[in-house]
Image (cartoon, rainbow, N blue to C red; front, top):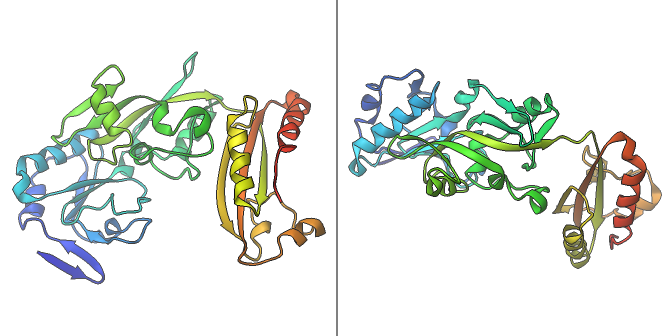
Length: 326
């Protein structure tokens, strides 16, 4: 049965779903009312209302819920989806008539940083990357690979890939994970890595939540840079833009972060917080004086220590001489 409630579609999986969920002994709790937020995501294309939202206090709550759904069997059509910060694009964090697990309720579990020759951090799958960064920086460390936006959950990006300007050097975030704790579709809590339950490990990383729910991750760290030089270069020609990006990525001595993207010039764009261009400069202003013009941008950073400023400037200047920017 399908019901339309104020523009939000509700798929009713089974009339006994809410009552059966109430029988579970949990440390957290289910919400059955005022849960329309769980029927939306960043993509804003699909809106499917669940029957309930789980607010887990422990991994055992998630395990009990998945075990219950498994025991109900396929006939009940009860689906379960993990929701981080709600930035999925295709409704992946929605569960029509089922259960949405609000993973951010697991953020109360401790984030532990382990320094040493091979440093790493243990963090909850519901923790935000920005908080992992802040905790790591207390030890002079930082994760190797990022996403552009850090207010996303650990489990959310590791279920996709986690790509940004460091991926050309370190790979995506899923290439920088030592170990995972996962709750499988049967409600089993399992640890996995390249040496333990490897099939599950590789299946869950980038698996879009189809092989289990990531409840904890051990993530590789590296020394955080003391200082960073940030550069943006604008192009009007796509071929020159891609050739420069490929050249920079292939160079042995290059930037630490390289990312390209497309923008449409709007009034005030070059004067926003991410701009390295001075709109008062008459030379720059004359080059980018057309609203609606498609531009291509390379964004790059170079990490360095304060006593390496002169050498860093030479390296970045040498690379910039190869640019074909407009």
